[in-house]
Image (cartoon, rainbow, N blue to C red):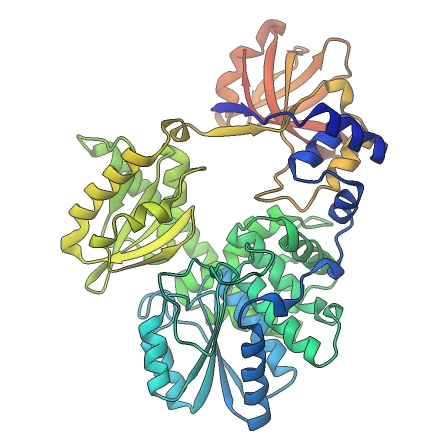
Length: 563
């Protein structure tokens, strides 16, 4: 692991903010690192308010989108709400369709089949709309590059409204409205909304035209928070407000579908991590293993008994997904190990029999193992499809752009993307991808980094200090859980390996005359030699609460240790 300590903010700024807040300089430093330098900045950070949300009409084409939807409602048109099959797409469809149905009955939903239609807007979906006399399609979490599909729809008399957050190509589709904060000509103040977030801005605009306050839309925020967490967008600015209130909704009054998914979790209060690792994989499993409409049905169901039945089906999909994920990951690892030549800068694997629904998860696992920009390919129809994942700091989307001569279609983000290509182009693409990454990646990015917020004395860790740290939540990209480093630590002799094959490391440490703190380091059991015989060592860690037999204490969640 590569330890990197973030630059210290200017001492003058730290002291000024600490004085204004009446708080510890370490807390002030953490806030400045998160771009909060005034009392007002900090107040808005610690007390998010729905009043801080931007006017949705600041988004380019929002007025056109609202006008076209209102026209459809007035004229009794049939509307199709269309979205991608992942968490962001299915939550977006659930949000938009349930909002419109609360005002108007002629609304249907459509999720493309991952295997028959692939990602995004499909000709098959447009044909479905035409066959059912639908004259308006609202596309969510997709559509920004669907020029040919949207032209096809226009020829059939169907209008499109695109709500997307992916990077546009050189041209925009000829839709009635294209809502995407990443449009170069869009001056919306916050650029990092997920697809469901863009959908929320549209229903916020529609509600405002009826004189409704944004608080009337609180029942939809559990969906938005789930999408923000699953899509790994920055939890800053507007996303932080939406995630904060969405988590509140999940913990106090979730929709029946989310309640059914979480009813067996033995926790009083769920956080973003629980959404990422418990709720999101189950919603995703529907589209991976069966069909994304199962997720939409779950998320729009108003009856708790019916929702519980839907959740049971999805739990079964998730169990199947985990088995496939494990099997394919093992096969991919074996394939890499068997090679006579190892790629220096990339990991690219392929098997025509691998399940398309889990190759993205497998790509993430391989990235964790080899820490290289990674592509996992499988065969779908007469083409090859791949999921791409990247390492921190490297833009895999840009790399794929430089390989576009060999690609049929691609899209995505800096750290995750998808693509299709013809089988005969696989070897050429693979060579070009390796070449592009080798030429452009900073070699230090090939070693996993731990970004450290500040060096800390153990004496500074008090209940009050931790209470303030908890107010930094919800955590995520752009506002990660604070990470600290401490030196001259010594184990008091109780340190040991724990778990199966002593894979994990348990410690009890002091620093000079500090109180003793327990700590747990998952997958650090192999470093036990560094703490034996009270040898001094350094540690990187987060601070967390340990609840054991009703006793709550603060402990260190170790990320790494060294001499």
